[in-house]
Length: 441
Image (cartoon, rainbow, N blue to C red):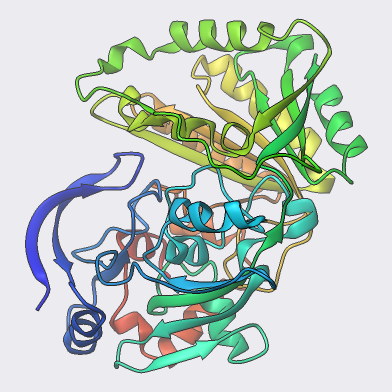
């Protein structure tokens, strides 16, 4: 039988926080039995706690990592990898990288589970070429509320696949998946960083490097006027040759007692200015380890503590390409004038949307921002919501902690298909998160 406890649980943003009943199945049999016999409709699966808001929070949480953390198969010749959903991307990388393989798509942390990557249909710095994580899934297994286990992919049970990938765990518990990996010859990334003076220059660098595999920009959210949108844009490619040996650099840990007041408008502005000017030349070329390129924040354990006890909100939206430049100009100006610039602001170029009903990316530009939770923040976010909608954008479920139903659903044309599918298959009577109830999924 699973362990049961009542504890304070939150997402990675540490907002919101409240008590939940947490069930921890010890075995796959425990998990199957609990899901089949559970009659609480406010139930959701929980992996490694790296979604930012309340998408993995509910009255009843199934913490499935202990029961679903086995590697199943790795074909090092063909580059296919099968494992249970509770295995983290970090654990996968430790196995595949020494054999010359890498994840086809990876977000900015390697500490999410495979199940979480599928449920959020994560994207990375190569979406403009490689799409979302789901586009590299060969097959996945899903445990439904009635105890049935179904295998599906985009050509088999396509509606279930489209609802599950990006569906934030609202169709059932993802048990395992087989993915197609990407071949690499080195753990090193050849990185070129462009220092831009404004948003127009930033967009020009992205557009000129569309054929490059990886691209991402850090934006100075405090910059105004002629410097609005100034950035450090990094372009990356895996090196053609080099060592495949993993590094074991010890990560630092953010202390529990870190005083949240140290992260304020003045210190964030100072950091942004120093970070931008740390690069002296317009273009800098260097070779870095893939962990530094893809997962810079993973080098600090519990980095979310730096925002203080109230936590922070990760605010990520995407605008279609035709409105991206004008929309980002207005949004960045609004943030700068409010004096609440983000400590971390990440801009990415995206390719075409896939067919999954709630997948976030579309062809255009996304911006992810971290805002420390404070009372004056929420009126600003409400203003930003309306600006995003004015420019035909939408929000990312894996990051969201507070958008309204009215705001969210305007960005997703297939939301009614998702709702109807859940109702037809009785999923809405068994799997619901605090987020899904808030936005009416």
